[in-house]
Image 1 (cartoon, helix red, strand yellow):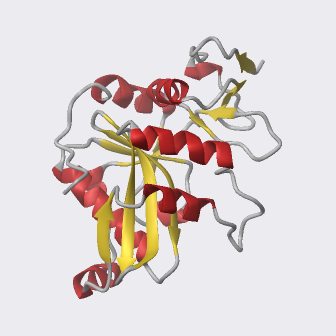
Image 2 (cartoon, rainbow, N blue to C red):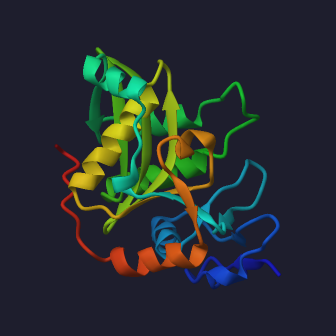
Image 3 (cartoon, helix red, strand yellow):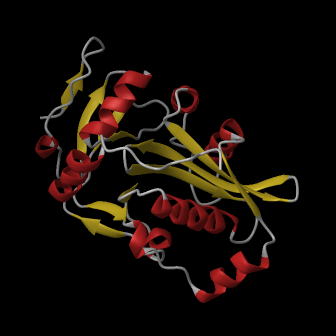
Length: 226
């Protein structure tokens, strides 16, 4: 039976209570205040829902992750990186990045990054928990992504691209920095062919929970102003 969250409690049900169909649906309801979102990621779940639905919380099994040391970069993308057509920054345009990620896509009907979701993650950014990667072509923002950094784990949320390979350049740059900063795992949440091409792979939910236990409270060398 699906658990409905109470607004006055930040407690989530155990991950093994998540439904098998749809895969990983753990709970519904609650709100998107910063404290609940932080607790959700620490617990191993994340919000994902459409306009008109209650807030839905997910913990799929298996979980798609990327270990920084397993990053695969194709020869063609390495060439793009060497050419230096794009400039990459961190945390200089978080609001613009999340708005671009929420914009309509040709291949999708609607967006799950609702206005309340945007406001919630902007608040997490103000608190130093959510971060953005920006990819620029001269002074134009052409790609980027955002997610949460907690301990030695990065929880990826969404990316966008307005120019060839722009989001890929941003993603590779992020992963290479995370590796230098001592991060152990990047949570990609759900499987996509795009992420698999970079070396992302599924792991059992129990194994993912083990990473949370070991690395959520271990400091990293992250310098988001670099």
